[in-house]
Length: 237
Image (cartoon, rainbow, N blue to C red; front, side, top):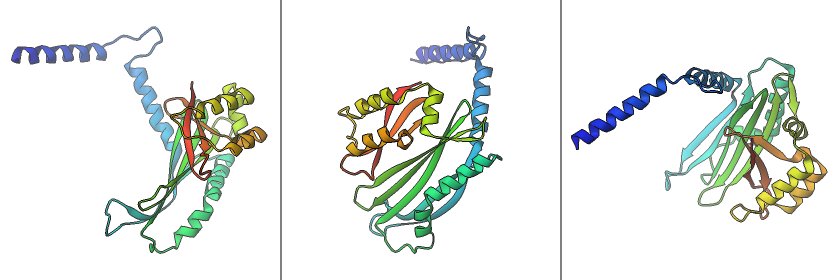
């Protein structure tokens, strides 16, 4: 047994050393270039920080696993450009009503919890901010809604869904059909029928983004509860 463990350790050390001294591949990808990509990604993540924040939560006395109250963290682009600042105002305006409602509200409803959180993704020069809004009640189903915002760093431009499709080389009609086919799959909750009419009439009402895995995600309202949104993978880049 001791001999076997020693052999395994030697093999692992050999693999580790070979990886550290691995020459560049045909595509020029080596440990140094991968580290540079990681460093760049870390720098990119400084493009968006927490802007407005509000956290007032308490655990229920009869159920310590449920915190009630409010936990809001709105994103803020720290980019010194006119339309970057305009996008900050746009995101804040879209969530102004719940913020105003909850800012001065006392924590009297121990069954209610509201949360806003955000993440962002950078692909080439396109920065996408994804805001997730959660509203839930104790021992009850909650509501999840998504806000999707796109910004072109190179041109200081807020991008619509149509702009994104153009940049991706996608056509509206086949994409919508592909989306409908996807969200018809049995493992996914069904979509609200009015939603298809809405995005056919105005493609900019369609919420799409590319996540960190480079998957194209679609956000859609559910059939039985249009206020509740779901996500599905449409394609991979």
